[in-house]
Length: 187
Image 1 (cartoon, rainbow, N blue to C red):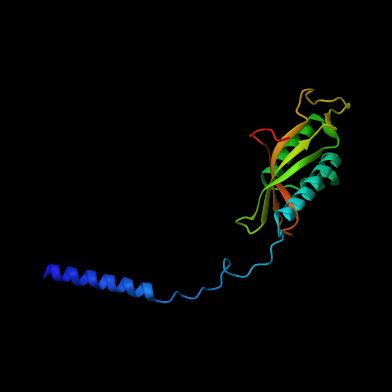
Image 2 (image 1 turned 90 degrees about the vertical axis):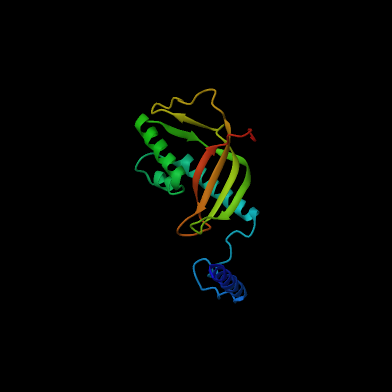
């Protein structure tokens, strides 16, 4: 009798499973993940690279023009970064203010190459690039105008830099990370 009940229970379970396999799939319901999305801001890696190039050039130019604590130029510079990069910028600015240092000259870059361009979990564009930062024409000086830079400092540095779309616009990018590339020097 127990064996008959076990066989019957197994057959009922298998029958139920086979019926669920044949049932039509429920129609998808609208949600954030299935709702239609706007067309992508960047239709290609070339467009993403162009946007990152523009954002990085603006960031370096604002850094070159930055005049110190409490100035509009400092606010404009800090507005171009967020996240980890913004925290680094704030820390460096505070250190420079404390020591009476400032950057003079101009920084530049070349050899920017796209690493990735994708929509992140916050539904914003995130673009990562490799870039060679060139500080040949810039220096750090004290309040008397005397250089405090190490004479043997590297003048060209390979960096990995990340940008993300802002709350205002997914095609307006802020720098979120800037790290010296630990791999082989591509500069």
